[in-house]
Amino acid sequence: MNVAEARAFLDRHGLAPSRERGQNFLHDAAQAQKLVRAAGVGPRDAVLEIGTGLGILTLALADRAQRVRSVEIDGGLVRGLTEERILPAEVELVHGDALELDLPAQIAELAEGGAPVRVVANLPYSVATPLLRRLLDVAAGLAGIGVMVQREVAARMRAVPSTKDYGSLSVIHQWVVEVGGSLDLHGRCFYPVPRVVSSFITLTPRAEPLVEPAALARMERIVRAGFAHRRKTLVNSLKGAANLDPAHVNSVLLGLEIDPRTRAESLSPEAWQKIGARLTDESADH
Image 1 (tube, rainbow, N blue to C red):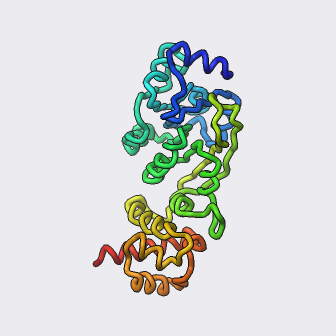
Image 2: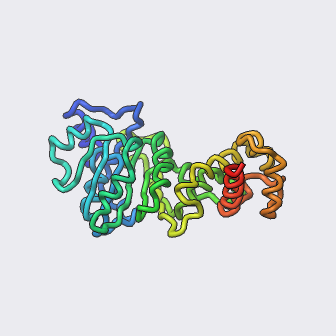
Image 3: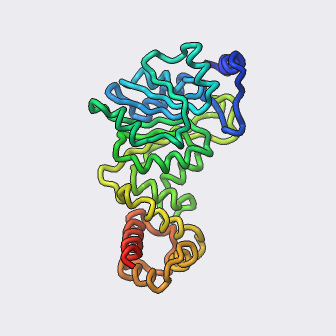
């Protein structure tokens, strides 16, 4: 599908890209095939696609996976894709909001029969980050995740300590998944052309996550507080943003052989795991 065909499809159904929803539709079939390969989709896999769009990525997924369920929030797109029978009959097209999906139920259903389940998503950037956070809670049930994000977000997710991109987003994701490579896509692959560079990044759930799902929200609060004021020492950041007693934080850090004067960006995800576990465990005891 080229740009003219994408525009014609939308025109036939009285649709237009929504700025409010941040819609930039992938229309390049060759790039879609590359994304499916990058996501590691295989013939035994069941795929939950989030953001059907014009169905270009959906078709590439259907060519490779055993089962595809695609969720699209835009009812007009769902209607148009259905009326024109653009997708193969075996693709399950669902009209719904990915941020309101019962993800554990969706994954459990797709996994029936033992199929590995992967999530592949091409979303408006405003939705990608909160969706990725939700996926961390269910990552243990997934074989892999592939999602389109802004290139800057991809850089932050894979960043290492003591670099400008390293932050709470890096730590939280690296606790749960191995952040793989990314594939940059030129704006011409989308209609309309986005103003930012898009990166398709792959995430593989850790066999043994550094933080279990039940503890993730509590631990996340500590990390976000630590990075809230990057120029402050860790003790002062946690005191101000997490309302923690500085003497207690100082004692915990010394017990872990971490200099209380250090700054958040110098600590590895493993160090943050130890800090978060100690602070959340001890706060729960008080």
